[in-house]
Length: 50
Image (spheres, rainbow, N blue to C red):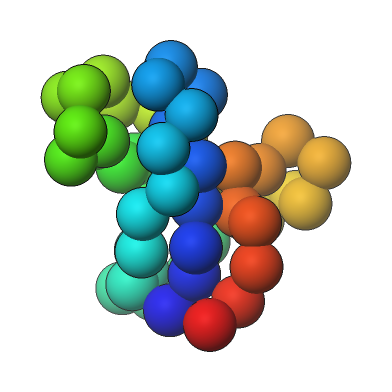
């Protein structure tokens, strides 16, 4: 499980991927905007692994 940050509203939320992290989509539970989660840490919205 990962802690990710929404690029739009800057809220943190938990994310449990199914399979690899390569270019997965996540919808923010707070503002509803979709964003991409990359396996590359520099492009990623991942804050830390839980």
